[in-house]
Image 1 (tube, rainbow, N blue to C red):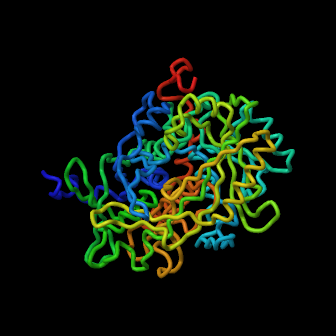
Image 2 (image 1 turned 45 degrees about the horizontal axis):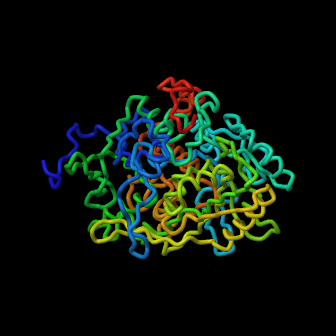
Image 3 (image 1 turned 60 degrees about the vertical axis):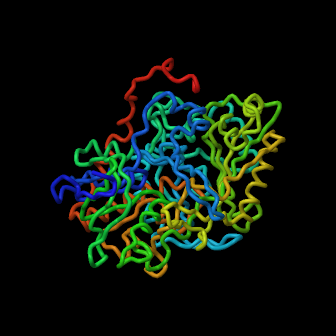
Length: 545
């Protein structure tokens, strides 16, 4: 059979109750919840499982060879080709995240005025999502402590205690408090720090060699498959969603698999490919009934792309030798809702994992490695992050040849420049006289959201408040593309919580049953306590010893 031929799914009709396109945080978490109903779920993933290998923790493999990043190229708004920071694999980009799992602030769900525009309200409020945040925190083993963060929304305590600060970091946290600031433990999804998790310096942007980092494969897909009614098809790229003659039902998911075109069917279809690829899939699914793309009468599919306005910062001192291995444990939200002197929101500050020479060399290849090593051993890494505001002209479109074009310009720069300025002063007061900074720029695909926003009005949104397409009755979208605003915290936990909420709705309205939170969170505190490899310290790669 050639790639141009089409065949239907070879197994009996009615085998699947739900098809999930994409195995990242949205799709993986939803599958974990729906699997407790006994529903037969097929997950379609264009990539494969990330192999467990020493290269997982190799800066050379990850940042020089780009071993795990897609070789697919997109176009930016100026027509320049770039290689996006995308990983097509089971678990999606979460395999490479830093596992920072914040709840959005209560105010983030309402309309907020910023220096450069307005962040729109969500069609749901914090109280609606709060119980699902609690469930998602158990599923993703989130560690933190309540009470220290002045912007923390109403909540019970965290399910697990915070990751302790490194001895090098602890006195710096005390100095931040001495400045009148309110440092709080960064909420992290890690399995048993100090025992299973070895608190290495290859967490951010690296897959975890010992499966100790909470991500969608470990906390979504594998628990779902373990319940017995879920199947994952890897190497299966969704090309189009085909509707029935009315245009109101997705009739089949058309995919490329093993060099052939195949079609899979189910009464419910859930899309969760990330904000860029989910929008691209709907645009590719144009038909006579949906000439501008599936569910796109509003013209909003692909529009309002957001990615956070982010700057990596490093304080440097010739008199300080940073011996911390795991320094990613501190959050500062003092300027989240307003600046130092009041006024508009600025955003969030958080410590980052240690920067490796290979990471800097990737963006600044002229600097020799020996110089980078000398510099980085005396640096202290932070991230300054400001809310990115939705704009109609920040959008995903398709070229005539099918390539993705991402036209994006960061917004809210007045607030972000002020936040970076404030952080420079903080770092200097901490004893780092030299501060370097680098912004992520116009090709930023981390923390991607928007493009298929949810809302009450079909004229101003693509999805309803339960993330069902206004125009297609059996189509749901559960990644961050549904976000009307980006807030200024990492989006992962909100994606997971919303996926659990939508799973409840699908179970009730489409499957005639209910999910079992008592089942899908059972044992979340110990189901991964023992590494599958039972590694001893001497077995770990040299990069983190």
